[in-house]
Length: 193
Image 1 (cartoon, rainbow, N blue to C red):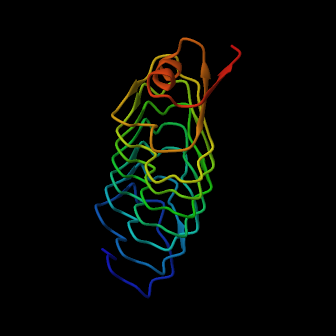
Image 2: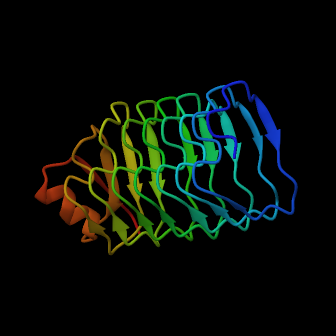
């Protein structure tokens, strides 16, 4: 719809919008302000890829954030994900190099391949207890990531899911995260239950 509109700086969609289709704002590099409609349920693949967004709050009711949805949003420094979102698809936040804070909902169950790749300003992340899958290379290029807290006891890890960061894993004893840290020679701290 607005893909490639480099002069677009802000937009407010009506509350009647409940889905934003593939690539709708792709490459809108000067789009810094976006008010998400309260009835929105779906942010499809590559919707905000390459946009100039600095901060975004996603309203309750969103249940789908597609692959590469925020890829290359270099100015995005904070994002709040509401309850109801169950999965971050592949490369959802890749290249968000200014991203310092991301709040993950308790409803989250899976973080797919490279979801946070090259989020070089991210220093800490809390992964909720319901996350059962952490995909391949989730944190590659996260050069400032110092702490990853994983509350889940049972989680499958993709190839080099956590290996490419300098982070210390905070986890429970005998959890899959604890076993993963031991097997891959990653620093860890055991939390009390």
